[in-house]
Length: 132
Image (tube, rainbow, N blue to C red; front, side, top):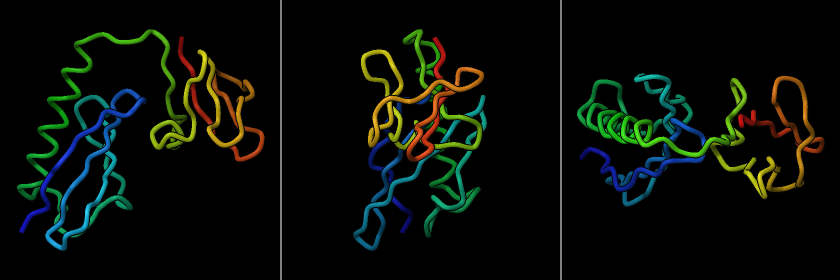
């Protein structure tokens, strides 16, 4: 039996989505998909049995995420955005959030400004770009 998509949640980072699946083993599994343009990026570490590129469930899931992504892009949104740094996942997984209009590490507090609009936690190294 194919995994059953039970939920798609838009994460704070634009183009980043958390998907929840019910597996035939009775377990639930989450998967993060990032959309870059119209192309999905799915880290191999997130995959699970039944999640095979080209399979019926993957094709249908990607179509649903694309539709949600296109709808979100067309609706405008906030002018301030917190984004993951290239290769990073701190915003996408919730390690860095906006608090009172400033990027903060959820474990250690305020982030220090670095070059190019990047902010970093001096304790754990969590990082994010902050676009106003």
